[in-house]
Length: 130
Image 1 (cartoon, rainbow, N blue to C red):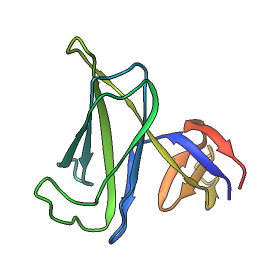
Image 2 (image 1 turned 90 degrees about the horizontal axis):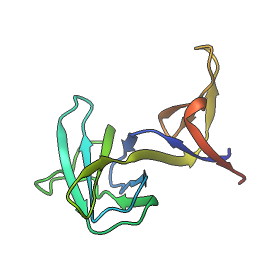
Image 3 (image 1 turned 180 degrees about the vertical axis):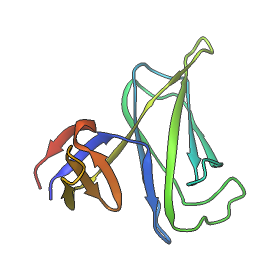
C-alpha cells in the first residue's frame, strides 16, 4: 500500500504501542496542547509541549492516561490547540499518517483503511510511494 497523510483525529491504540500524533499548525505556537479522548468522548490524557513552528508537527503518546496508567487497546481521538505568543488560542489540524491496507467503495465515496482507521479519500492531503 501507499503511505498517506490525511486530515483526521483518529488513533488506534494497540497493547504496548506508542502512537505518533501528527498535526498541522497554521501559525507558530508558544505552546501546543494535545487532548486525547476515549471512544465515549472523555478526555483521558492531556499533553503539552513548548514552542512549535508553523506547519506539520507531532508528539508521541505513551498510551497512558493522566494518572500514568496504561489505557486499554482500542480507538481514541485527539484534538490540538495552539497558543500564540499573545496568549490567544487557535485550533490545529489533527492528521493521520500510515500505510493504506484497503479501500471501501460501498458507501459511494471511497474510504481508505489504514491500521483499523477509516479515512475518507477527500481527507487525504498527500500520497507517497512505498
